[in-house]
Structures are given as structure tokens and as C-alpha cells.
Image (cartoon, rainbow, N blue to C red):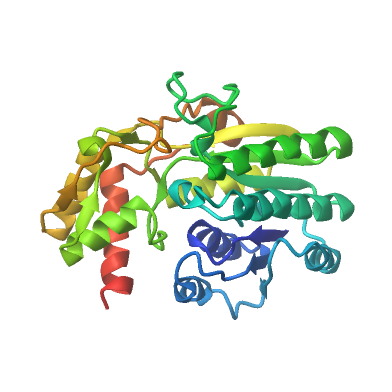
Length: 317
């Protein structure tokens, strides 16, 4: 099957591309290699598949509607995994125009090309951040999610809504997967798992909001990839599906696991959490189990252990 993956040089996108190629798919991989974080990291991520004859890598901005349409016309992908976006809740504050252009209007460009060229399944990478400070725990997909705390989740919720419009008017199968705190090898340097590991190694201070009392539903990347691939294989009409582990972890416990792996104590600063940070993320994964046969089986201790092995091999060398 030919699958188009946007954001293919990123953490999740490159891991997904590798997994699809291993199982025999043809992948049209799109990324603009922007400088949100070091582009050299992204180029390293694609090195493993750049010369694969079933991988077609394009350096392209999803805001370029004409280029995206031309790509669809040339390759006619049967499914799309749209992971390309600007991430980061805190980074998005004060950058609403950028997040609107890339995460919303860029998504519309990919949706429109998929509509015009008969793509069967459109899988959209959304985020648990859309739940904000929801009082309903665990987070369930029927929550209205109308109170996002920053431009990043607001842009993702807007794209989910537009996805329904394309399903309603054009019969596009659109599945929004709400990712919960994904971590693992190739993790982004701006995300907490990499930052904690890197700063413990370097002896640098780590900001741990509310003295580590926040809880996050850490989800190992390979479990998420299995969920994405299952969604790519299933035309489900319009669905919103949580992809988490369903077991929130205190940040103090998370840091303690990293300290044990690295063999060093963390230097901590513990200010109050900003308004952009929810107290907890906690996925109800019942719908994912039913519709995608999703079975996340990686405990956070094991997942962080694998990330630490990668860090020693690829970052400390």
C-alpha cells in the first residue's frame, strides 16, 4: 500500500515510516526540516530510509497547497498519516498565527489534496492537550474539548472539526488520534523525557512544575505506532480516538526513574505550573481497544530504559 506521511523526519513520523517500510509498504515521506529544533536531528532520523527504494522523501512545506496537490497526483496514496505540525504547548504561546498557518491551514491543504485524489483513509495526529483542564477523568473522546489552554491544542481541535466537515461533505474516512505524552528513541529535544535525561546527564537544572505533582500519561512510541498503523488500515468514517497508556505517572516518579537509569541526581527547580499546563493527562483507551485492537504493553520503566539506551548510543557518542 502507498501511504503518505507528513512530518516524516520527526520523532513519531520517522519511527512510523521505518515501521511501514519494514512491513512492505511504499511511503511518500514529506517534511520541511524546519528549525523548530535542530534540523540535523531530523536528517539523522531519515538516514535509515532515505535510500530505500520504497521511500520517496520530499522536502516540502504543507502550507504549499500546489506542491501538496502535485504530490498526491503523482503518487495517489491510499492512506495518509498527517503528523506534520508545529508542536509544543508552551512554544505556541504568542505564536498563534504560525500555529494557525501550519497546523490548521496546512492540514486543510492535505485534506483537500486527499479529497481530490481519492485517498481512502486520513489519519490525523491530534493531541491530549485538547482536553485542557477537563474535570472528567479519565479523558474520554466525547468530551467537548472547547477550552484549549494554548494555541497548539486550539489548532489541533480546529483541524479535528474540519476533518468532520470533509467526512460529512466528501465521505472521507477521517480518524483523529489524540496522542498522550509520547516518548522513546528519537524523542524531540524540547519534550520532557529527552530534556530530563539530557539535563541529568549534564548536571543542569530541570524545571519541575508544582514540585512534580503533575501527572502525565506517558505512552511509548512503539505502542503509538501500532495504533497509527491500525488506524491506517481501517476506514472508520469519522472517529476521534485516544492513544495513551491509561496510567498517569507522577512527574516525581518519572524523574526518579531517569535518575536511576543515568546514575545521577537531578537538580530541580519547582515553580508553580503556568496556565498552559493541565494538572493531569489520563487517557480512556476503551475506544482504541475496540476499534483498533490497541494494546499498549510498554511500562514506563521499560520504555525509558530503551530511550536511555538510544541516548547513550546516539547522543553521547
